[in-house]
Length: 171
Image (cartoon, helix red, strand yellow):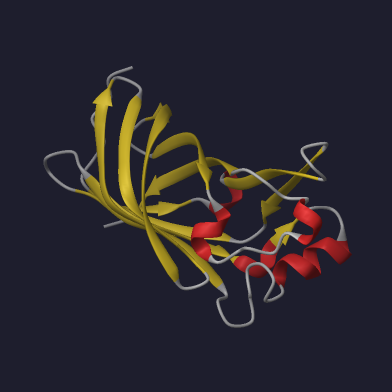
């Protein structure tokens, strides 16, 4: 699929987008899964086909289907949502590399701590009205101050899976 994406502003379609994470816990015996319920964002495509933009997650909107765990994840032990209500990914560069892959470089900020992040997204659909990207990448939660680890239960990396649909904004 070779598609030229129109220049201009693209708005994230929150209803058609998902950001989920999973992390092994209980000494790698249990996988905790969660989805962020509030996702926003926008991007801008330049005439050379490259793009910049921002994806924003409401840290308090993470839902793991366990209220007690969700409250703990919102606490200062993890996301500290009261003091850092947003998780952001500021895209500094997104460039099509092959017919269906996009190299994305930017900065992921969690708890006010920003780290460079580069990933490859898969272009799953594109036309003049909408663009849909999928990606999966890992994050070392310790790099963002999420160090709570009672009895060594949580090791390894968290995996983030995203499906992001952008619609061309009216000019």
